[in-house]
Length: 479
Image (tube, rainbow, N blue to C red):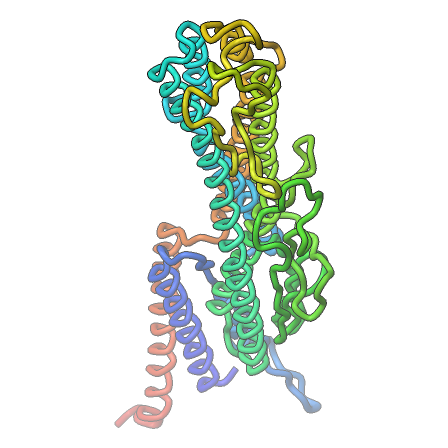
């Protein structure tokens, strides 16, 4: 190698060390940046120049170092694990939150719950059986019946409001999902352009990864890397992002809970569809949207339908049983005025039983308390109504089963959320152990590159002094 070649070798060492210092500084600056993946320079040794000609050359040193690029120290398999766990956490978390709210709307146990209203209702019948025809006990009974009907109606309305809110949130989530897909497509275009021109797109890849994780948490998307630096994102087995293009999703189906007695809503069940392929449901394997769609499903019986619609159907079943059981006994009696075949509860045709349940009598004259022909002071029928709540197939037992079922589902969802969150935390931690910035490592890298820079500068100084002797001091011997 020539003397001037030595200068070039030292210069390349300087630039490589300077680049290493710059990368370490970038890592330190982003140690607290969400989604940032640490970087390292990639370098390789330059071999000695090839000699040509008939005269053989002696052994020569190489020509220095080449900085080949800046590597992003990420792991695609760990990234995939984070996305997969985020999808499950999104699904479990949303269902747990909504089922806890559903359970809370029952107000059980507590003074505002249906159980308390039932106990007061049966006690009021016991009171009127001891004082048939009197206005005060009758007023207490009518008030207790109205309170019970209103409590049932309020609970049903809470479910209907929750269903409508979840439907609206799902619609907003779809809009967020479509926006995220468009952002990934834009990132793909930029990254491909930067990489084609030989630049570093590491920070852009980090930003894109965060968006793909958002898609996974919303709809359980899977990601496939392409050779040109772009990624394809799949939802339900079909690409929502393909290179620099993306497809939109839409939420279709009913906008209100199913009407009573119907097996499916008139507009079809709520489902996620491709905007360009209406009517074809997109299968979801995780994410917040999957949780929302599962909650919005119509009641199917046996706990296989949507949790909210199943709970609403349970309210209707309870209201119908309460009305039927009370009316069946009440019709066999007579009021103090001699009227018979009287109903105590009624519902509106075509409306949910829980929503339209109301008390028929308005005064003591409309309440059947005694057996027909037994006189105005008989309270046998009122006592029989009071005993309905103690039966093995009473409305109380039905309501207790409903509360237990909802509570069990809520508890199960909470446990699922805890497991999913733990898995997500573990996946993120595993990835962070290799991809996050360690300030200790960066300090070592800074010191290493600093010493390399100083050594390269010293080598350049040595070559410079040698050249100074050759150029300025040759031929001065003996003068």
